[in-house]
Image 1 (tube, helix red, strand yellow):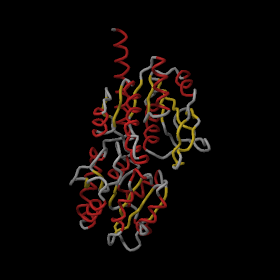
Image 2 (cartoon, one colour):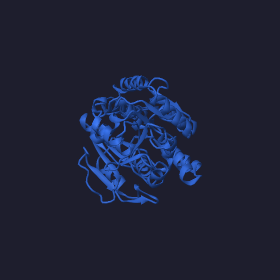
Image 3 (cartoon, one colour):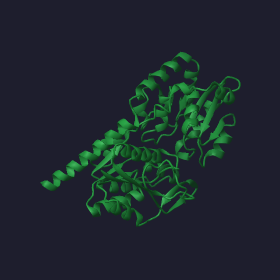
Image 4 (cartoon, one colour):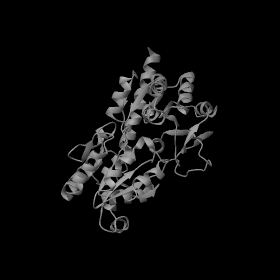
Length: 374
């Protein structure tokens, strides 16, 4: 199968869309298929040796106020890449800018398209502009309604899409690397470095941006015997460092180093209310760490309240603090929740969900052939 993956982000970018697109391309290659990726150019257009297939880069500009995020510019390279690859199917990863052009090209060439919903753009519009939510949904609806199939990463995302009138929506979750992220990487030397007085380590991993609402951890960071560890970077970092002077900010960490940090935590806390899936929650569970997360969006599918962690009301700093306090007071509960979380995700490998994706592709192609035959 010849597939063109049109993605709004790709490594060396570090985010959920980029990671999922990379894993999808790898799995297609592993299964004997032929993918090509179309993605925005990076700041220096530096090559990334992790790419398992050809990558076509489209000119881009940094997002104003958030230079770590780049937005593609209109380009004929999308159409050229799809045509030159002689694609059987177009995969649109979190389509918004490039994805719109990819969808238009697929329609013009009569190619089937699978659109993967990954980013709560309407929520982001509300956060950054205080308005624009309706306009964001109009754009989401226009591209996803034109696709043969839309794949949602969680039950909450699927329900949201359907409620906004988007047809042909199915569930496709995300995988997790349970070999890389595992409890056995717990590092006592690292723990002593981060918590020299033996504090309980409560970690957040992700972008430091307004929509993530990491400032909700400020109360948690003042709990006696607790040290908050923040992994990631973004425009909110200076304000967060002021709001949480006792926290440790490690900046961006990836790969095996990130896995070691995860396994060395005692509790993982996520604060963002706009997660369509929340991969870092799944990585924490794979690392055997109990999770505190908002009871909204993707975490609803991942965290079993009272079994693998606590689901708390979104945007409620006191609820986050109280959940962490409960876990801090009970080492046995932390161990039980961590073990249950690891057991829950052990079968959620990228290979397993990648095969599910190929099954969705096959269904779309069969549906197209059946429609033509009729």
